[in-house]
Structure formats: C-alpha cells, structure tokens
Length: 277
Image (tube, rainbow, N blue to C red; front, side, top):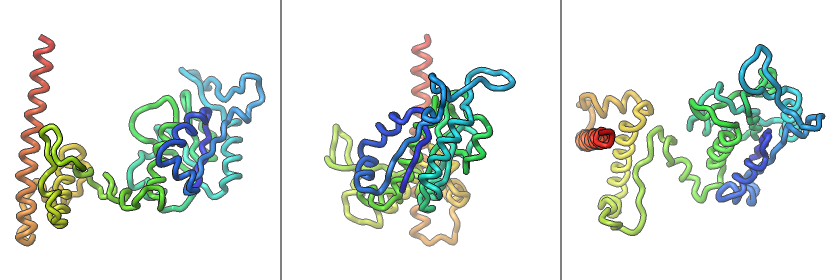
C-alpha cells in the first residue's frame, strides 16, 4: 500500500515513518511513504504558501495554487488513491473507518493543513475530510501519521501476527482486557491465576468479562444496547445456566469496580481539598 503526504514539513513525516514497525514494513515492500511539499510549486523568493483571509480574521490561510498543484502531482503518481484532507471539520476517525480504509485496497494521499486551514476551493480536489478528534493541533502531519499507522496494522505481514490487529482494542467494539507476561509476581502484584491455568474457555470468558467492565467504566458509549441491558438490566431467563452464572459474576465484579472507582474519586477530592486548605 502506498501513502503520499502533501505536507509543508516532510521531515516530520519521514522521521516518524522511519522507525519500528513502519520502517520494517517499508523495507519489506509492504508500504511506501512519500512526501510532496507545496512550497516546491511556489514562484516567489519566500516560497509563500499562505495569505490573509478575505473578510478579515486572525491567522493565515493556505493558498489554493501550491496546494492543488501538489495534490495533482500526488494524483499523477497514485491515480486511484483516496485523497484525504486532515482537518477538524471532517468525520471523526474510528476503528470502523480504519478497517474500511484497510479493506478498500486503495492507496492514500493525505493533505496536511496548517495555519488557520485550507482555502475552501482546495477541497474540490479532495475525496473526504477526516478528523482525529474534537481538538485542534498545529498541523495535519501527526493526525495523518496516526491514520497511516492504524491502516498499516491491517496489511498482512506488517505485524508479526495479523490476529494482533484483529484482537486489539476497538476491533471487537470493546476496550482491551488486561494483559500480563512474566514474571508471575512483581513487587507484590501477581498475574491472575486463571491466566496461568491453561483452561482456554475460562480465559476467554475472563477476558470478555474484563473487556465489558473496562468499556462500561471508561467508554460506555461503545457498548451495544444488548450489552448495556445484560450489564444493568434483568438477566434474561432464556439464557442457559452457564451464561446466567457468567453475567451474575460479571455484575458482582462490576459493582466492586464501581465502588473502587467511587472510593478513588472521593480520596482524590479529599486530597485536593486538603492541599487547597
């Protein structure tokens, strides 16, 4: 898969992409990374790519001529690529979008903004706008790198095991369960016995339970309506006895986690009040 970044700061892209998994993926020919700098399409001594906005306002706006020229060159190199402008006004990146991009088999051109944003006419050469969250950064390079990194994980061979990408947080719609490795005991903290017992069915049940609890506590909006009901509503009688026991144990553990969370919040509030006094 090929990625081209239309960016005023190609060194930021290339430095980030030349390490760790992304570097190995490039050396293996699984991905390629290239940058095109809009400044190369300017004609003044200062290589100007921005100007003041019509109608007044604070800051500068990226000019259409050098940006569109850079996008056109990128499209010549990758005619079938999807052109994505990184900006706060786009749809918000989620795991489902990452998987959609990865499954498309397309190459990608990322157009990275700066200053107060793009001249609106630039978007005529863009397929879609994409945001990585409801906040503003100094430029689009970091968000674009995040998208490339997320997509690359789904390219066979980039990760040691493709299952690693499929099992990560959000791929199942839930946050990830806790992970452990050796040693069994570290400074009084011990790996849960169930993970050392070798019963894979019990391990999977434990992991699913932990994922549900973590998601309920931290990102409840990710839970389906059915999962919400199984966590907080009446346990359906139609469930077999094994599943009823599972959800009963799950609720008990969830109540313990909620109590612990409330205790920590109260302790934090007390400490804050004492420090203010």
